[in-house]
Amino acid sequence: MARGRVSRLSVRDVRFPTSLGGHGSDAMHTDPDYSAAYVVIETDAEDGLKGYGITFTLGKGTEVDWSRERRGASGDGGRSQCGVGPVGQAGGKEEHMLTGGYPAYTTSCAWLGYSDDTLKQAGPGLNRRTHVFHRFKVKVGADVQDDVRRCRLIRDMIGPEKTLMMDANQRWDVPEAVEWMSKLAEFKPLWIEEPTSPDDILGHAAISKALVPLGIGVATGEQCHNRVIFKQLLQANALQFLQIDSCRLGSVNENLSVLLMAKKFGIPVCPHAGGVGLCELVQHLIIFDYISVSASLDNRMCEYVDHLHEHFKYPVRIQEASYMPPMDAGYSTEMKEESVKKHQYPDGEVWKKLLAAQKN
Ligand SMILES: C[C@H](O)[C@@H](O)CC(=O)C(=O)O
Ligand SMILES: [Mg+2]
Image 1 (cartoon, rainbow, N blue to C red):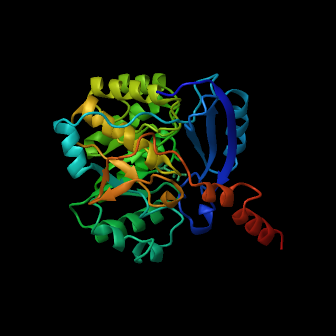
Image 2: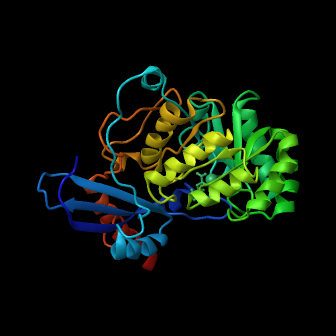
C-alpha cells in the first residue's frame, strides 16, 4: 500500500494531431485532436511510487481540465484516473479471461471523416480488420444519403453475420433520430449510440420505444458524468446498452456503482473507449465487471480504437478481437516520457512544427 502524503503534482497538456488523418471524427466532432490532461502525483514517502492520471479531451478541452486539476486534484474526486492494484486470485472466470480475453469491437474502421476509399483500403481501412474483428461501429448522423452509402459499403464488406453498430454522437433531435434510423434499419445495426442529447433521458426513452421493435437498441453513456444520470436512464428504460467512460465518470468508485446498477437492471455494459488512453483504462473496469459483477458476456463487448497505444508504457493487448487482461500492476495510465515531451502543447517538437507550418 502507498504511504506518505502527496507532495508533488504535475499536469501536462498532451495533444496528438489525430485530426490530420480524420481519426476520431464524427458527426459532432469533425476535427478532434485526441488529447489529455496528464497528471503525475508523487508523495513524500520517497519510495519511488507515483500515481498517473489522464482526462481525455479533444484538444482545447485540456485547457479547462488543466485548470481544474491544478485547482483541486483531490478536492472533487477528480476526473483523472489513478492507479489501482493488480488483478487478484485466479478463479473460473479469471481463467476464462486469461485464456480468451474480453470481446472487443472496433470503431477505427469507419470514422466519419474517412473517405470511401479509406474505408475500403488496407491500412487504415476495413479490409485489414474484417478478418480480425467480428463487431464494427460506423459513425453516422451528418447526411442520411452518405450514411446509407457508407453503411451499405461496410455491411457488404463484413457480410450479413458480423455485428454492426452505429453512432450519431448526439446529432439528432428525437423524431429525427427515429426517422433517420428507420432508413438505416436495413443494415441491421445492433444499436444506435447517442442518437440525441446525452442529457435527454426521456428523449432516449422515446427513441428506444420506437426502435426496439425494429431490432435496434439504444446505447449511451460516454457523456454521462455521474451515477445519477445512469440511474435515471435505467429507470426510464431509456437504453439497451450502457456505455461507461472511465474518464467522464469521476473516479473508479463512480464507475463501479454504475456497473452494479446495470447488473440490477439487467443491462449490458459496453464501455466507451474512443479516445487516447481510454482502452488502457477501461479494460480494467470491464474485466472486473465480468469477474465480479455481471458474470456474463451476453451482448457485451468493449470498444477498441487502434490509435496512440504506442505512447503508453503498458499498452492494451488485443488477441483474436479480444482484450487480454493486463498483467502489470496499476491502471495502465502511465505514458512514455518521450511521447509526453514530443506531444506537449504547444512547445513539444510535434506541435512546434505543426504550428509553424500553419503560420506559413
Ligand atoms: C470524438 C471521439 O472520437 C468520439 O467520436 C468517440 C465516440 O463517440 C466513440 O468512440 O464512441
Ligand atoms: Mg460514441
